[in-house]
Length: 478
Image (tube, rainbow, N blue to C red; front, top):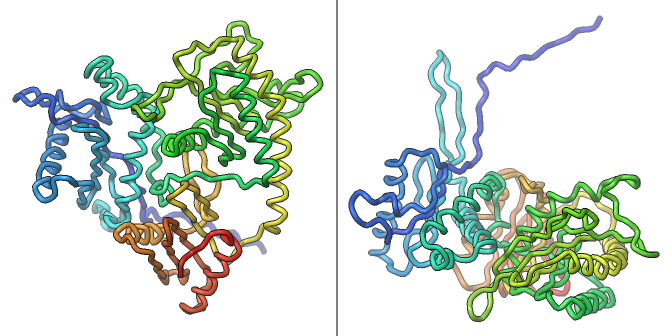
């Protein structure tokens, strides 16, 4: 006899809601100071369909909060405001220009019996200020990378041009914010470096030098493999934000052609007697197309005197990027010259790096679930490494641990930020995991151990073994 049992949802389940963006606006309190002209202070407001008086009221409230907190500390105004339903973050990137982001707190909706409305519980402590404060700063850094400063727009075309630029950029960029997956890596804004042997590294350095000598228009070059940085001629802060754009936005959008079959039109062509696996990720998609457009996005990087406007050309075999001065028009001849010079050489280098990648995997041993997971960050060179985070995509950053553990990591980081001395914190989580934070000489290490029966001494010894195996060339103070 066969028995079939059907279970139906009762409709009485709890619903959980992750953090979400409520408002995002840019304002300048020195504009529209006359009564009835308050709207002139608002340079950008999301969502745009909010009623005018509500926009003015929200901006006025933020302005009042900032001014009130200045009475207690003139040099350090408010950074965030906590309420039951939301969290507001304030950032002044340039004098009198303020960016405000309002995030709805995560909440749980619990059903009630007898047809009563559900009960909503806001989880006010689940949002970490340092994480979402870093997100606001990233928004400005990304805007500045592609548009320059707010002051530059004001000088070039006044308030009208600035409003136009803000609308164009943030309308698209805010759609890429996925606040539910923001965590400690957003605070660090680090760079993942690819480890290479000396000989392969020298080959890459020689390749970069040859390209920059042969193509005089090249101002800076960066070389990446598998979303990891190998070489960069840019300043550290510029490379940091450009790296984030490349690895979370540009590269994921162009990953599909690498999976194309042998007969696919997306596969590379033969250049002479050498297989040529190069193509442009910005600019012309097909050099043989007579109607191809040779337009490249402009970016702004720091110089001693201010900033410099460049063209961003991303040419890929395994991941390579070159920047060009925007004052020069980039023609078909230049792009064909770049393709002919860089493509074949980069194809050979990609093969060498792939061999090194295989060697690194073989040395690290077979892939299996380790007893520990960790995040490492070096403030001096922005080096970042995580075994907690799985591959990033354009829409989400997946982690292999429970959100509660990520919250503990964020809390430990906040504690580290309050002191200048080296420090170590060990936490026993409710789920029987051990969480260890170690701050030593501008380096931070966070470890999650799955050893519920271990004691403090055993946990400390395990972390020492981890440092000895994974960071044997890095000195951590005890």
